[in-house]
Image (cartoon, rainbow, N blue to C red; front, side, top):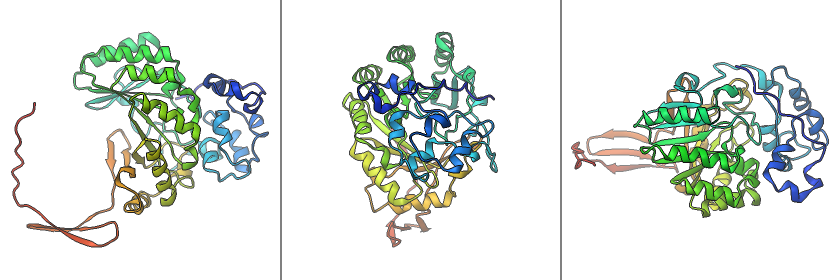
Length: 382
């Protein structure tokens, strides 16, 4: 697979030169910072960051002026910088790493449509993202793997019409919100024409990386296609800004439920206090912490990866400190396309007839009076 075409350089104008214009999402996309020369006026770059820009085969770099404004200008350990700025290790293949870690390409019956689970499918509707995250599992996706315009959309719709087991369709990419409202309305409308599709989802990082994309008009378009869920990716409490909170409020107030899928990233959020602060902040802005994912083993991700056991311990450390509503499910997506697996510390200490002993979040052992009746018969449904 080949990298996507490099993003054209932005103009020398910066986000600070025209605050009113910078509030528009198209301006943000057009003025992304993509090269070493463009980045240098804004940040004191480390040696690794500098050399990262010249690494052979580096996946495309692109940062919106808004997301750039969240970065610590002098500290290379900044969690925002680490997610968006290149590093020489981005092109190194670690043990077990793949360009397609989830086996999506072999589960693509028509271009741009991934069908891994019986009841849901993913449509790759956009190639670009406001920010090209360094940990992305699709950062080397070929544009030819998208649905490819109206003709590709119709081919995907025909496939879905012949797959009555599919009840949920996820718009992904790239980031679907790099498309304009009219394109999104057209895509959602065609999917809504398939009678057995019950729920749509839009997976987007725009509320985090380009919150001005979430306009009142966009919220109306998505709400009209409901029931529709918006799933985003906040990875650090520093990303939960007033602008991001306002973007999420527009969606939620329009009747669009929101959920968050964080990725566990070493040196970014690999700390139970940071994760707890993030999850509390998300609940405050009415975004449900849904998943915390173990990082997919995509090529160049080694610097971000944590041991699975460490992730289990981090999530266990949050339980009891914050409410269950605020705690995401820790999971990994099994390499090769085998699906998500929930990961948790063993809570069952022992079992015996009529008794189960469990370990609580405090480490105490409690007993539960279990039933021996194994008849689970229910009235038929529907």
